[in-house]
Length: 219
Image (cartoon, rainbow, N blue to C red):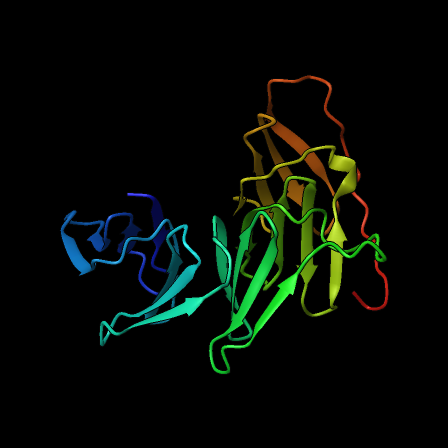
């Protein structure tokens, strides 16, 4: 399998994907076959699973009816997937692609050379939406976060870390783990107090906080 996701609506179950999509009962380890879809990354939102398989396509799978929808993203997808405001976000080496699930219109987020506070890099390595609706964007050029309620984009430049491959919630409230496996870092970030600490690093010459947030034109 390639991806494991806990069921946010029922902690007794997890969903795995790879050569197929399966639901596993954590109490009995029973495996329930859901679909033959081959997915590299997936998320579960309500009664639907969204995923991609390193092609130019993303998928929506209705768990009740087993009906599948295909969405072309125009370019090969290789990193991350999330759902926000009825738009499916996926990433690759050339930006973030947003496909509206109703109109099927496509938007693309890329570095804006005229705006130094746009996303850190076009090569997307991770996408993560936390419980507060913040969207974390790992790139080969650093870590960014979009704060939807304020329309802020925050670049965590002082980290000195690049090529984040995953972002996960920490056990501490409003703290997150950012994994930079290519640089061999695991960092813990506090979004409210802008704290930063290194959990693991093979290189001792890392930078330490505090972090800074920058805002331009309400973004």
